[in-house]
Length: 152
Image (cartoon, rainbow, N blue to C red; front, side):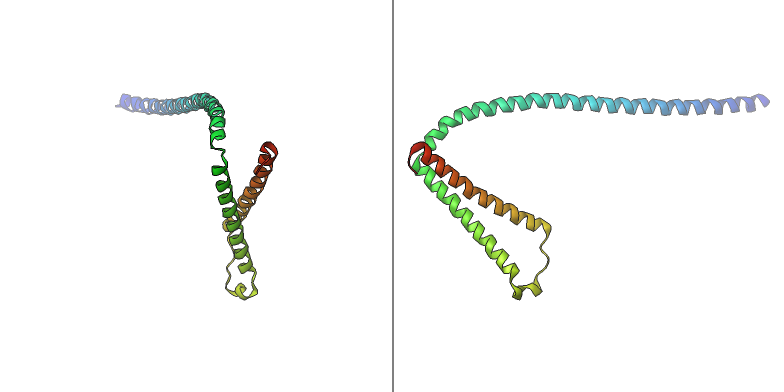
């Protein structure tokens, strides 16, 4: 019986090192998985840089071909109505924003107004900027077209 008690204690001592070595192996396994994922991410970035190069070359080739296509569709019959629609849309957009801002500022409507959320204010500012930029681009295109081709 004394041997059983002496062998039972070393068995418990042997169990503790097995658990610690098992924990160490788990750490090594997890670190191996982590580094495999990291290596896969690096490989993905390298592959994506090649894809980006391919997209860039494709875009350049398309742009070269698109210039020929743009020359074909740069007819006054297409250009002028499209410019008119863009101008009309921008003006309607700016008028709608002006009306909205005017109605909000009226003293008669202040008592029922809720604060305008920041997202809505930002969206209105972006809408205004895009409409104003459209008008600026239309003026620049008209001036450039007049300068290059000597007619509107």
